[in-house]
Length: 256
Ligand SMILES: [Zn+2]
Image (cartoon, rainbow, N blue to C red; front, side, top):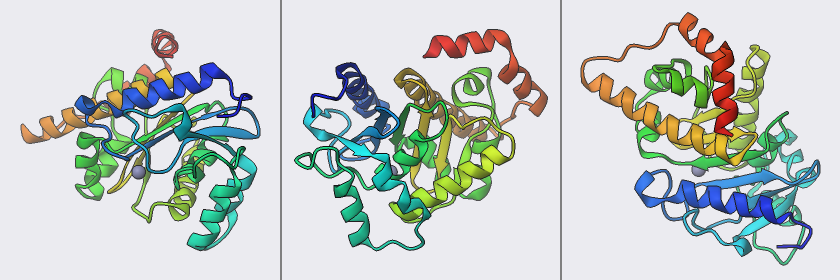
């Protein structure tokens, strides 16, 4: 890693990666998942392709330029060779390994206001719901069942239908997130990818870890309540009250 990269940003990204990769948490195994953080207006750090979150090393994190990857979101269909070239060209230091193919959606999410950190995983309980069909996915994205789910994951999540991982997925994430923002929502804390996995985004590594762990817990609770005969969601009014409460804002700050 180049000397220009702030040591504490790299250290906190590695710590988040290790926290998300812990085998006992069931969030990501082998080479699953990836993490990123913004360096400045021009560049960000992201996990390189093929490495494991659980024991990610400094040499397996790569600095990339937003300017080399964001144009892929505007292009129509992009060939695999063009994506490969853009990924390699985006590196701040060409001796570093190739960034993950999911670096394109990391670049987009890190360009949203207030977003500094992104964590993508494939959690077991969340994916149990995301592989269970449209109605279950919609309920998990749009309903909330207990106060801490709202505090950590927001009042609603973005839901993205299944598409091929890579540029197509990055474009779909951009479209659905834009729709979410246009509907008057704040930037999401959570994005759900049907038949694929989970993305948490926030201002700090702590908020990304909290959203991931709480969403996985909420997923286990939804599956458990459904097994008992059905789950009861909080009313929109109750959700709005928690979402807007000053003491909850205080707790959200504490979570950072
Ligand atoms: Zn993935």
